[in-house]
Length: 336
Ligand SMILES: Cc1cc2nc3c(=O)[nH]c(=O)nc-3n(C[C@H](O)[C@H](O)[C@H](O)COP(=O)(O)O)c2cc1C
Image 1 (cartoon, rainbow, N blue to C red):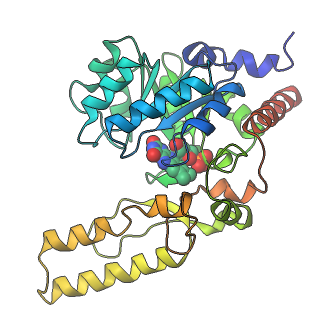
Image 2: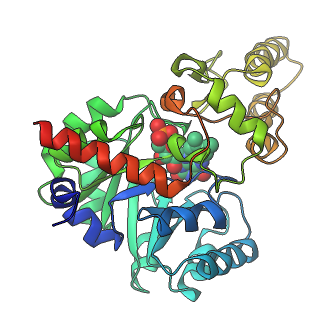
Image 3: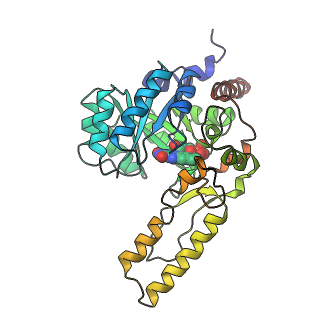
């Protein structure tokens, strides 16, 4: 019998859906989730997902090929719905016979789910409301990820615990649902599985895995941080929209607030028009995640991190993190 019999049983649908040993996804993290981390996660029994982010189709093509060279296990590709070349990127996934595509960042545009399913891949989607989740699942999406505001990166306004109570009872009997946001140990995984989740998705916990190419200074910032340091960006002026991002507080996050106040003042004084003002806000963070992850600029770059960052204390191989999560989940279920 498997050492993880109880967890395996609760993860059965998720494992069958993903084709992985455990229904633990490492959520795509732009710049971090590239060939090395993705392959390490999948080789370690989890399910890795390449973050396409703003990559061109050529770059994605190379990244998928390189990942395939490092693992024979299944992995997915995360595409951002507002990418101007979304359908070309889907074409690249088709060329490589990618088995799972995650559509993130917004409602999937017309025809995108169909285009992915047409070559036999499974489609995972996010949805901000239960009504929309039902609509997407009934119109062809194969699985749903619910992601709460504890998560790192771009976030919605509602906590994972609340989303789980709202979405799982309504959907989990009929559909495959993964829970993401604020998961740091196996006890939490066991809890969501018992509530009906088919599996879980973690990001922050894996960002500093040994195989992650994130800069040593980026990792050091994670090891030092507490939960309260991972804050959501705040919109200062109702006229200047800000999509909330959860990241570690640094000089950049402070300057972003100051920038919003400055641009709002310029707008009041008629020195810029609305479009120019909004673009200035939108462009503030351009390239900022890359600066932090790749260049190690932890002062001015964006240190996207979830609140669970307080539990990330050292570099560990991805396979060890996954094994630890499974042991903890199984122990938690055994105690019930
Ligand atoms: C550094 C970082 C970058 C991320 N980039 C993306 C991304 O490009 N696309 C995406 O769908 N989610 C992105 N996420 C969210 C993760 O895929 C995952 O859902 C989230 O981290 C889960 O919550 P947790 O951080 O509490 O584990 C990112 C998260 C982090 C920490």
